[in-house]
Image (cartoon, rainbow, N blue to C red; front, side):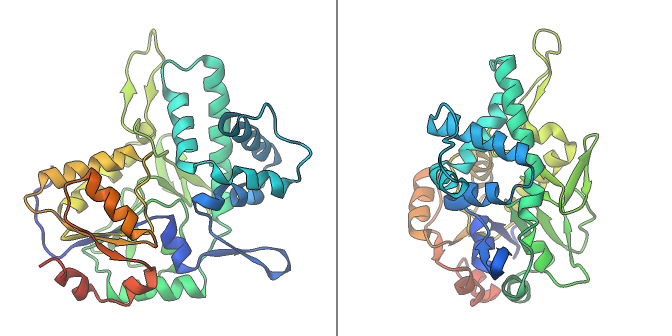
Length: 339
């Protein structure tokens, strides 16, 4: 356990809303643009941009059957109409269901094989889908202002996003590095506990790849669960155990949180499905002699603050409603809120 040493370190957490707020979009035919997806439009965008016809059909069938109760995909509806029906299907719940069913000892062999097929189809498409959302004039302006006014090399940026919009919006030469994959000494640490596009895994080792590659850790409470009985039950591992590096990444995130004067959550809504992060945050708060200051940057900051205070022993978070509003402040103004 890292010794608590609270100085002026800030840990910034980026959720899907951060990429949206920064202006991440993909171009489509006739000069149109589509914003990077969040919960409300994830499946519409994901299935539209999925390149593998077989993968798209596999995912489509699974969602309609397991989450909408259809015996089969409604063939009379056009693809855009079918995708709109999926708007209410919770992304986190889908990923949690798949990762738990493929790992749980009670899952039948036939169901395990099926959900593994669906999981593989999702992972195969994630790199191609999110590589459509690159840095642009807007994201560079927003994130470089954030770098100038807020970020210091002693800080850390935790991104729960599979996209790499934040990283690609940073200036070159790089002054940042991926925790667990690269040497972070003297550079801003970027910690991606759920994996990323642009990463690849070979024989249990994660390294940098192309933007078509992706390594994905599902948001499930089974992250570190493993059974070691290789006789009656096959050896099953939680997804964080797929590579020792992910255990290191999560440990590094916990250490950074223990040393932070403030935790700034940008576009992250604390989804119920991500129970492991919630338990980690609870441990950090309990182990510290003084709780860190909390800043919520989210259009729903009031509701999120109420949920946080109902679940955790925290002081009233600072609430900001827009990423640009946050960047309009200075680092000193943020830290002065928690003197």
